[in-house]
Length: 354
Ligand code: MRU
Image (cartoon, rainbow, N blue to C red; front, side, top):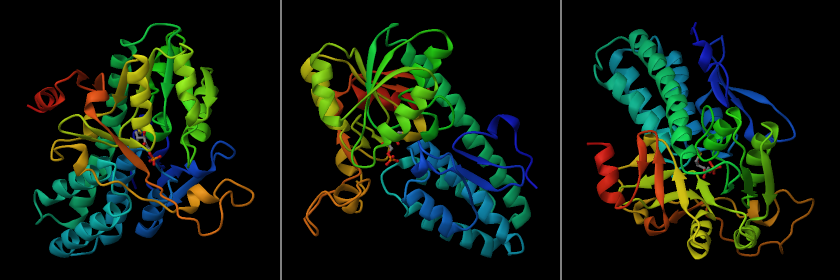
């Protein structure tokens, strides 16, 4: 049985006292707060694919726990067979979504732990996987806290902050990344005015960001994505804070579709534009944004999902990329757990890992 550290027992992904992998089903929010226990590799794959668990760091935490939970079924295998099957599990889970680097990062990290000495018996390897899964989760809490502290230095009380998609506690562990400074500020009596893009087509901004901020008592205004320009022009936005799914070595980064448009608008109106993310989201093996694989999703998410009846002719062509890449030239700074990184990003991101 897993003894779960007290501070890791909550959030959108965690192990319960029976050692089971539990997630909040983010597809049900804000109307229902439902928890799911994920037992099989197919259930975990499906939960990631349909965004029941989503947000780059949360997917990474989920994958870390998944490798432990799924390893337990293999306790009676020989060391060689155990390693072989765990590599297969890792490959399978990694194929659920391509863009967020945290998924492959966490799986690689777990495979590295057991791969360090493949001759260990399965029981020993399982203990190590559990410890590493807790470490991934705990580190994310620490990283988000530091990102939130750094982010808070970039704005002043009363500022308007525009955000896109959801990079709050649901997408991470605690505080989140892009809305971390707002939540941390709230705890300290510092108030901001947040404009949350609804984030078509899956409405992470409407369903999740406005839910998290509203519940925390933050002054949040929900806008349709195409209202961001108006809100900026009105002078209501002093900074844009967005999350990221993969930051390339040159500072280009992938985030929810629509993010690059926000960056272009911000440049037009002279508003600083920041992406906030943990170092686990920086992929130094990915030279530029052109090397990031962008997930394409079901066209029905655009045509008919969320509507009582389809809002487009049946069978009409539809393009549904889940992410876009923001050019590093549009980014004022990248806020990481190791500090705020300014251009030139190719030089300064490398320094973080030196
Ligand atoms: O498709 P999603 O909802 O997983 O996309 C999530 C985002 O784009 C987030 O901004 C990103 O993962 C950062 S979460 C801290």
